[in-house]
Image (cartoon, rainbow, N blue to C red; front, side, top):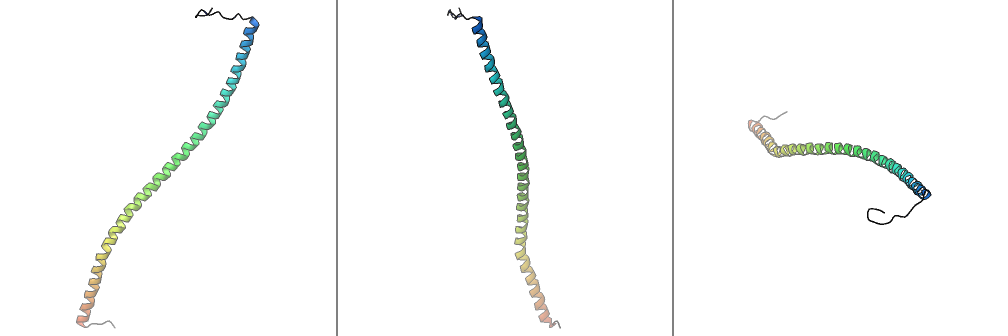
Length: 112
């Protein structure tokens, strides 16, 4: 009888040995499958490591690219400021040339 009061079937020694043999065969199959699964998992983890390395390199390249764009943004600001200064500077230079021309014409000095 078991713990629940049920009668257990009477088994001969041969039947017990057959059950043990079947259990051993099942365990062998399970161990083989586990070994194959472990090998596949190792390969997958190796591929994952390579992928992580590639992602790390890509992250570094992207950081460099973002740094470049940040620098270009600053350069364009400077160029914009120079462009804003260029118009008044051109007007001042044109005024200076006009004044020198007027002064030269007023004095009567002409280049030969």
